[in-house]
Image (cartoon, rainbow, N blue to C red):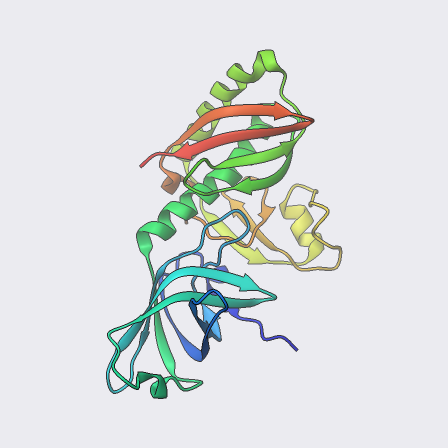
Amino acid sequence: MTFVTKLEYQDNLWKLQSHSNFLSYFQGEDGRLAVVLDSTIFHPQGGGQPYDTGVITFSTDHDFEFVVNDVRSKDGMVFHYGFFKNTWEGFESTLKKGIHVGLNVDASRRNLNSRLHSAGHLLDVCVKNVGLSLEPGKGYHFPDGPFVEYKGTVPQNDMQNKQVELELEANKLISKGGKVSAAVVSYEEASELCGGWLPDYIHKGSCPRIVKLGDHPGCPCGGTHVSDISEIGSMKVSQIRTKKGMTKIFYNVGS
């Protein structure tokens, strides 16, 4: 049976410091060191969201750190990649399974990633509010050109108008604000929270994690988000592209 890392950030969207238990570390084929814990608040890259960075602190007779510069997940196990800092010869002997460690996520990076991810979901709401018949697909919520892809098209002669409408609607909703929440619920409750519709990859009988932005319909998502819609700050819809029955809407958030 494969070990599954407990994802603390899914229970608390805004947790940046925590504790965990060290399980192991190893050097991968690419030469990078990876630390494995029994739980983590570090978001691994995936779901259209970049990985968190930060520090894992080992408190032994001599404190030292593991600087996390990449986080990945495979088959439910999270791997924290990086390098040890402030160590001494033979420090490896202190790395015993079960020792307690402190976790500190880089707040500025997490904040930007959460704002971009939340803005992508807010864009889904805006698409419906301005009357576009588009079915949400995958999203790319990285700082270098975030977008949401949809099934469906926008008429070429209406793209500019819809781009303006989407941006106005997004900033109106950001100004109004609204609490953001996330919970793992039954398939039936998830469908209800998402306005009676769930994507095909959510299997009947499963218990998906649903994120809700204010009073708007929710959506299944495993990422991190702001605590209130207003924390997105501002939103710029920069471009709409339609090709082969698919539409990409590009956006960004203000500093």
